[in-house]
Length: 271
Image (cartoon, one colour):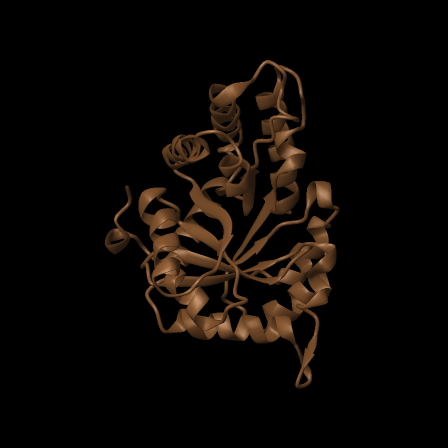
């Protein structure tokens, strides 16, 4: 398992990972048994599916993002997740663990230890609703990054994130708070910013030019790669795609099809 004390800053390793593939592509690993090829079943099928996807897309992907919910819902899901995380680490790419954790005190620290120390994650997604002390445990580990949910792609995002608070949208206040928490600690802070709202991405990039952004929402959710790249203005970035790559084919050629879909998206991201 990687030693946090020996790790370079996440921002440096992110730049290296993108340089290695030429594209800021992150491939989501969301194994849905209802959508996987019929030939793959049970725990062994989940592992085979995820490992094959990782191997076929790693030449294009700077990072992989397992969604913890898809593993936790399965029998022995945590054990399956450990195997998949090890396979991702063997590719040499970054491992972003998407659990949207967010708790305080000892509970937050245990969540962080599970994701960073046990699973070897390079980064984790973090829910900031409980405030600064729900972010802090995830940026106390040198070399790791907490991607804080700031401006997301889901339809209900505007219910809270866009509220006016003393003349400023709440998402801007969350971003500023997360950046302040990260500035005081050993790890890095990043923002989750949805691809379907490029105007918000542009607003956040202008305010935080050096913060890494994790951008879901391209592919199946309809976000535009061109709009994302223009709004990002050259800042540090990972663009995540899951379903459009994972389920490019439901047949025995699923891994090859995933690799081809990843290459098409990576080529778009390189322009």
